[in-house]
Image 1: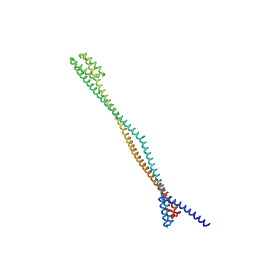
Image 2: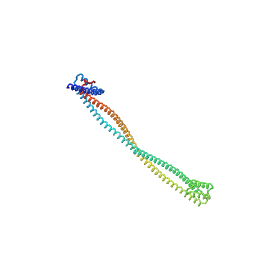
Image 3: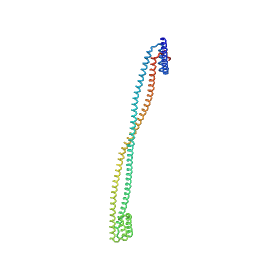
Image 4: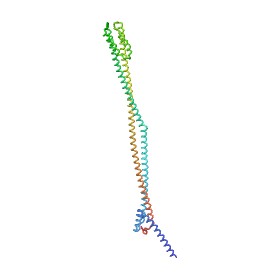
Length: 358
């Protein structure tokens, strides 16, 4: 009876051992599909067949697992450092892009809403002052032309007056010689009177007097000295009136010259004032243009800064994406290797590799 029980127990133990070997073989087969598991199991098999100290292999595997875990921790740490660096650089470059955008927009606003309108306003003022100057010079030309025409009229009038005075003097001289005048002398006197009439403008206040003298002279034979005296008196009166007219015209001419000079002086002063304002506004315009160029240069520089910051940001994002992929791949590989090594380590400690096919 005892023998039967022992046989049954032996068969049961053998079945359990066989089942355990089957499960171990499955683990071995699964691990052999991985490079790292294959390497460890082959080392375990070699130790088993050569009589090597298994504990040395176990210690080596434990050390290997710890090294891989340390490497994984280092990978995690380095990636954390890289992530912090990326976040810092990304924030820096993003801020630089935003700051450049703000500067560019502010520059554009200043140019469009302040400097460009001011430049056009100053140009408009200068053009308006130039137009004033042209109108001013036109007035000078007109005033000068009028003055020249008035002076020519004055000279012509003075010439006529002088001719009239000369003809009057001739007539007076002729009358002073008349006692028993001949017909020729009478005709010559009458000719002098007509000459005087011709020298006097039709609208002259002396025209009536001269006509009366001509009528009187044509009806006389100049034998009556009383009549001659009346004619002489009238001629002297006329002569004095013409001389007074010459003096009045000369005085008026002097006044007209003074008025003209005063007017030209006024126009020249206005022209100089316009020029002063043009000079002042031109200085302002040049300063505004210089400011515009400074803003355009600043805007171009900030656009260049923005492009550089954006390029650095894009490059950093690309590099970080690559680093993240490298980190992920390495981390997954280390995790798999640690898992495989731990599974292999468990088998090495629990399985007799002399009975396992590797």
